[in-house]
Image (cartoon, rainbow, N blue to C red; front, side, top):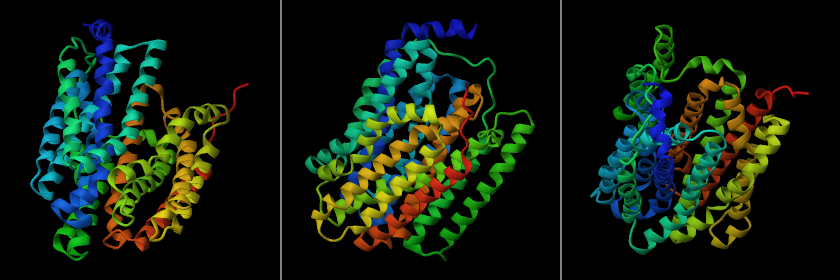
Length: 464
């Protein structure tokens, strides 16, 4: 059977495919965006302090960021429809486990399982659209998918805050389980898929090294807050994690030389803009992970904002990103990504510095946090689309998928490592002084990303 013939049923079901892809991505995006506003309520009921709050965020991101690359290989081996189905089932079961978790430890484990489900769903949902649509219809479908995925990020903090304040934090996980119950029957209606011409071998060792490396480092960084740097668990976790990360690169080279399919094709980093773009991503998205985690906690735990109001108060960056991205993308396409990637993080860094003016008075939101978040939003909008264009435009078209997956994984890992470091930066708890330190670290990371972009990124030659 040829790929074209295999695709035909998928195209016949393309309306169902689009709805499935939207709902699947919406669920994953909604879950990611609602959790931050629930963290104070989770701490109040389950205890554990800042450490549990960090793990509730990072347990999900560790498995999601580590496994999102191998999930692409799984979809090639077993089919995208099947992998999306598996991912939704895993995500749904884990969501129910989160909702009924009797302790912080159970909640953290359930969040890690959610990350596995999210990793299975994320790459395959967009791949389904690419397989089902062609030409202008594909562009429109991807645009619709992007809009709904972005909507999840916008409505998540507000709806999540209302749910937390109204009926309790546990119901935010029920909120994500309900769309899954609707989506799975729709997935089962899809009758086609695109089988690979050759079934690649899955880089199991690479996946294990990635999970152990990232997970070990995060475990050590978070648990040192509770146990101290000299605790055996902390030392072993940091050493094992660092060793796995060091071993990852030579293993990937070995797989590539043997003619296999490495988890991360290292030859992509020979392209200057790909390497520099991912280095900038590491710094910039680390800073954005800091602002998403710390600002929401500060608004609720220090300024005593209710969860729904904290959700609304933290929305400006997301709204500005959606409002400006298309225009910035067009300008960057005309003038090249370099100076947009340099200016955007610099503007966001100014926003972080503005937020250094916060104190104990919640009224200061209007002249500190709000203008700071607006500048962060303008900065993000200025650099996100050019960054994506620089990274993906530097690799061959046939490798754009894996290039996007690598950049996505780098962004997620950067965010989770910074959240793991939040305990060190905040000094063990959320306070005005700790918030000031977090904003200073955020500004430093953003300025580093701006400098890397200004020096390293190259604009493509202008065609005449």
